[in-house]
Amino acid sequence: MNSDQFNKAQRGAGFIAALDQSGGSTPKALKLYGIAEDAYSDDGEMFDLVHQMRTRIITSPSFDGDRVLGAILFEDTMDREIDGRPTSDYLWNVKQVVPFLKVDKGLADEQDGAQVMKPIPNLDDLLARARDKGVFGTKMRSVIKMPGAGLDAVVDQQFEVGRQIIGAGLVPIIEPEVDIHSPEKGKAEEQLKAALLKGLDSLADGQVVMLKLTLPDVDDLYRELVDHPKVLRVVALSGGYSRDEACDKLARNHGVIASFSRALTEGLSAQQSDDEFDAMLDAAITSIAKASNT
Image 1 (tube, one colour):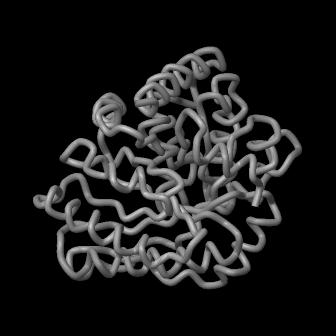
Image 2: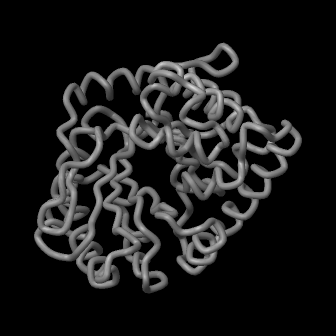
Image 3: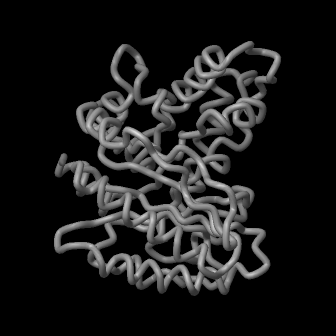
């Protein structure tokens, strides 16, 4: 493991850019970026277009390692190049941004108020390939709608797969997202915190994870997790909140940094000139980095 990347992930300023929309969410991301579905005829063309969008973001002068600590990539993006270099190599060696890889294959159907991850076939092969490409860590997402048995199943699965990822020499970002529209969001978050503390206690000495969590109803609810010796970093997802609302909530949760996706790219479009695009991205990065710095 790269010790410079480890130190940056643990202590660096800024936030993590989530640039990992996958097959299912890519059309929506492109549409928000001003590229309609009739602009491409198959998945190949769609992924070419989304890679152009991500390349534009990553190569922008406003996307810098002083404010952007890390970036989460989709597998297709990891396998491509930016300016003639593998994406993860470009991120770290040109931009000083720590590369992460989304490894989950989507969500299973809802059961007991939650959605665990679908099985991840060939995960060991993917992890070995990511490590060879200089990727530091991974991300995998589950969704919690209600408190109960489903929530515990989500956390158990996240730690089980997390141990496999640690065994491959990478740092997992464990992401049990609580749906912001849950009628029992606060109650689910209390149960989640207890389940995460239990999961952390199950890790061996020297094993660490990162946590990616929904911004909680109660400010600083996750402070104990932020300070936990087995937690490298706690990051927050925007979860459907607007950028302004997400940043307001984030600033009230001390020690938590952003890992925003849609809230980062809000307002960016393919039709903007490079100057307009860079200015809009710079404003977004400035506000998210500031909220992360509390």
